Image (cartoon, rainbow, N blue to C red; front, top):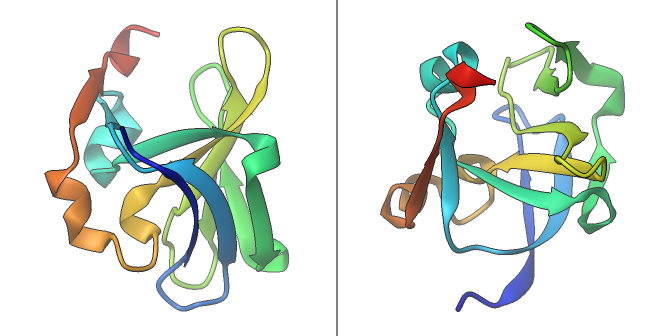
Length: 121
């Protein structure tokens, strides 16, 4: 079982920085048109476990399909380090791209993977 700890992360240019408390275990790969093209490996946390430290002013928001998820990206370098939405029970959640966590990067490929059929949603 993974232990919950605080990670820092952000975009490529460093304008967007955040902290997140999570258990880095199984990550999620979605097959929707956006996630599959971006190659994300996602970890989901309650909104209370995520803190945007800087960069709110450079974030842009992209929404598509049913517009339930805010896919945020840095308007300077284009990196999509996190998104926000709700789980099936209406709770506010943050989806963190674990490849954007400091010290994780490529190691995300070695984490257990759960595939999500986002095309069907």
